[in-house]
Length: 128
Image 1: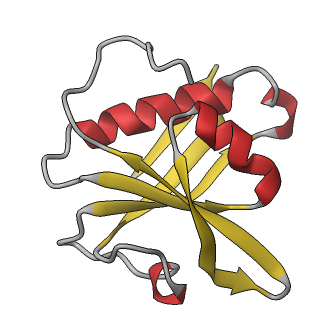
Image 2: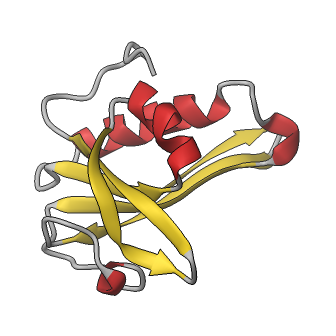
């Protein structure tokens, strides 16, 4: 479940996700794709450094969430991020669930979710 943004044939941003079938993320969610899952685990949102601070990440996230609304079995999107990214994802409509069970070395993460329901919109109107 991936989506990219291109400018003049060059990939400038991308999102990679996979289906997950549990309420919360765990270490097992990192390498697995659960075909019958109802949640999408967003593994990464990346924007090339020369294209950052231009709104491309929030636009791509909005488009990705619209894409997920077209998948009838998906009910929500989940992600884990560092504390400093929480405000960005909140602007995109995500809510914090609390500390994530997953850690990487000494890095700790906040788990966030976004409900996926309704119909996809034809234009960007999320406030993200």
